[in-house]
Image 1 (tube, rainbow, N blue to C red):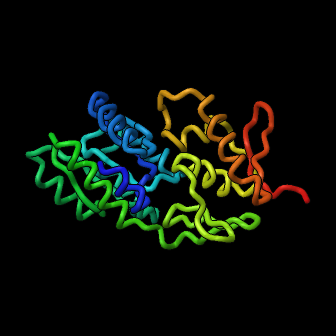
Image 2 (image 1 turned 120 degrees about the vertical axis):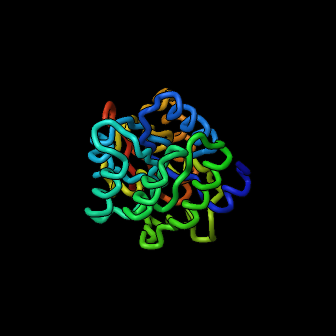
Length: 235
């Protein structure tokens, strides 16, 4: 993936991948995380449907053949409860009827196994461009504003130059509306549930972001053993 182009498009997204082939799932997750996305891996249809009830991922990659509930059942249930996030279905070469059923059930795109990782990345980018989340209002804290569509932090004089991981960290804390977010919760948002990344990485990002926010009177507070919260510094 062209990372410079991805940064321009703002296409670093949170992805939930539901695939029962562990090797395939891990391989895809490794590639997508290397491109800057956060990826949650799930391997059972029933568990995925429950997980997606409260999760805020931007995109879902869903295999049709799953234990528990099939991918088609998961997709139908998502659409029935008003969840219209983009869904990329994974299907076997011979499953033409399933591909048709998936599209009819509300899938946004499908990819036939075996597939090239470059094609998967391209489809993720395409769905990311389509899902601009225009309905998410711009949010503010102190003199700073967060543009969710462009994924940029805006100051009084325009956009701030902030690395993408720190932007994701800022977004997570901002959406918490002053509530404390655990270190593990931040890590899951930055890298995806189950990622092999040490929690100490969060401390590094918090420290860097805290320095960037300080001139604007916005601070990241810490509660020992609980987590972090975003607030306007007391005057």
